[in-house]
Length: 500
Image 1 (cartoon, helix red, strand yellow):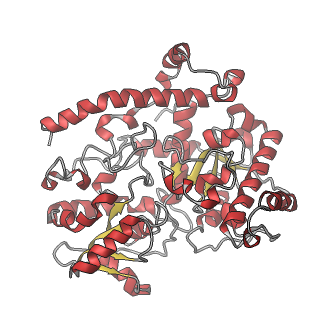
Image 2 (cartoon, rainbow, N blue to C red; image 1 turned 90 degrees about the horizontal axis):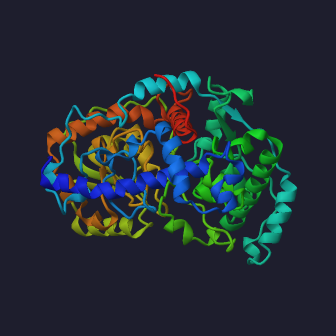
Image 3 (tube, one colour; image 1 turned 120 degrees about the vertical axis):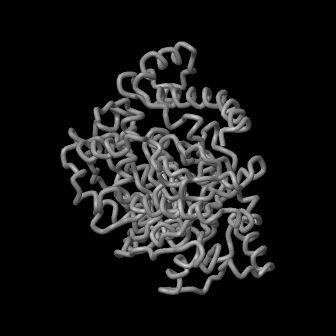
């Protein structure tokens, strides 16, 4: 596979890599905070001169591990990237979406290729378990004052969209946003939780954006309610605790798995948006979907808050594991090549897929919307591949289902940053297809032989534990991997070095 084209592609990546590293250096400098105070660039809007870059090169470079930006770990390109960011760590293997340049038969899965992008993952994970601690803020905001402000902000809207006074409603534990219920519960009963902020590694901003949104029937006033509440909440934290101001929120994180994602901090302190880590489902590094929605354009004077692959975390969609064990699958005995059971409406890619399949009537493609219970679960076991195609947003619960039920995902979402992108080599257990190539999915999947499929299936089952939520949590599961990524972000951006 290391032919002239591969070397040419690597050569073409070098100028981009230099710019990526320079961009990361600038980002790190802006987030260093403690010790630079008044020099904080985006706080005082001072221009970055070559002098500052030289300072960063001397003092910050020795502390930063740039391995996740190496050309050999570039993400299989399938869509325009946010700014100059190349999706971190996706292995050397090309994806099926590169069929314009490479023959699809060239895609192989060598058994000696590591599933983990970092060869020292296990030792780092042990260090994470020993050292990581989280402190949770328990401050609350006067909800009545929040409502009065929201009422004022939405008084120009039609009557049906205006805010109405209702207290926050609990989130359904088993619903798609259930992680906002289980995460704080699991954290408090884990060894990572501490009541002493002095020994904390990270600080948890514990508000539930889904519960706040549910105070209103309509999305517009519900989202405004959440944004105003979060603004007041962060103001209380920053004025009452010194931990926020010493790093300008760089070691703080929040969880919002509702579709609004990072937009919940639209009105909050600038440092929440630029420094604090967001754990969200809507890991859309382009943000075009958010910009086009009416509920994200209520405050015209505010800039949209976009998911940043450099600091934010893409969470695994919530689906609690009830001790399910995937059935054994064989390449020859799988009844279907591809399956997808879901609704038709969504982005153009989903509608195009249903249109092509409906007109072709392929016997080896299972598509429908009327499978339930055991019949729905068994469909995953009868298919070689399972389609994970974007709908109204880039994320879908199908991603959690394919791992729980053991089916190789075919992901169609150009601007989606999948979970654990900087930990796992996704090309070893998943297929990525561009949205514009959705009509060629069947053709590309038919080109994968039994050996390639078998390797991918084994790899999928090996990493499955990282994509499953358990109650109580188990080591290496989805809950622990969220905390591991927070610990890793702390080491990268705050310059802490650990001995393994």
